[in-house]
Length: 362
Image (cartoon, rainbow, N blue to C red):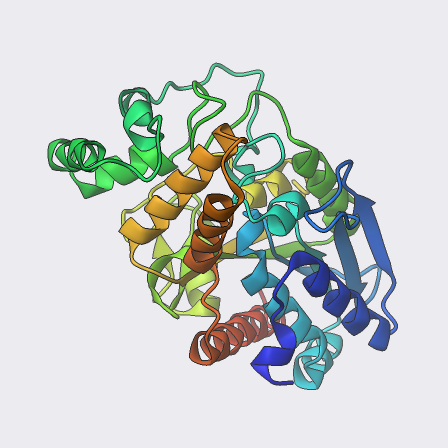
């Protein structure tokens, strides 16, 4: 298939393409329906399809849409793999089950938000909420600057933000903003104070499809960080874990560890993939975040700031609302043929390497 045939322009279109690709392979789809409607009044759901034996010892889980609007990319990779006869054959020959988790955050995908309907960053929400939480004091100091009272941001606001960059340095500022915070529910990268709807749905799916396997590989697809069109392979677990050695053996020495400061991402907690550590503890687990670059980081951050301001100001005029939503979409989905080709090529390579890695002794 051409890349254009795999990518979509809306959540509703992406879901239909995914369901059609599953139907063509004769794969049943489980739909975990979201309680709210989509932007086009469509049904929202986390859709799951599985190819391969139900008793497979090895499972590869490929997820899209953890960050809503980033789902255009991950959905296209999933659809391309479902249509890829070589990939399907190699997975079958290896007796490896492949689970396609489509649109982990369908609300954000449809409404062009990075966050869930609870305004929570799903990829910071997989944590033990019974434990005391670490305060992000740097975000507290930044919040009023990040989400000003008016938009577009004034020159004074931008100079204030620049002063924080000079004071903190780029890496500390990135950690302060994107590391997750629980003090401002109306702010950016909010962790939430309890599991979100999507958190519960994803955990149920993982328990059902991977709690009895011997090895689980989870490839979670994201966009928004790094050079345009480059898919960085990010390992986010502890530096001394066998998982890191396995990841580099399978996907190459180019695998970056955020914990060791090598990645475009800062070290994070509450990641979605680590829900598997709770739900599938007997299995050997290997997780990889595949992060595709889009626009320069300052533009991506500006889009997030604008969209959060819009969410906090629902009375904004329709023209400005559409402008801000398009800005956010463009920050996480590059609607250009070359970018799409690069995404599908690298997504396929990573998926095949996972199958090949599982076909040899662990």
